[in-house]
Length: 141
Image (cartoon, rainbow, N blue to C red):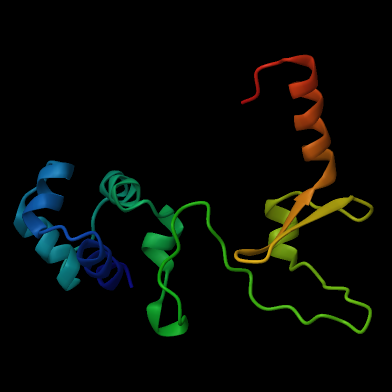
């Protein structure tokens, strides 16, 4: 999988093997061998490659294009799958999403909408916290 990911990410970013080699401080032959599956980059080079392409290390190593209709997502972006809307408009947020975003039973969620871009769900406490900091004139990270 990693060899296919390296090749597709390099092409997606319009890099040559020479470009990647120069950015990582390795030979073009090393990049060619990684992409051909003859050898594998060490962990330091995998980390550098993930940063170069803006993907997670896990995605770089484990993403399997044959098992997905979507390309390897950028770091911090997720596709949790489809959910079905119930009779009363309820949805179940997938466990992986709840875990990553620390959504717990009883949390209040704010639903935002933009007719051109879609719906967003944000924890209401985060928005209230943000507004509280603005009201006090505090810097926000």
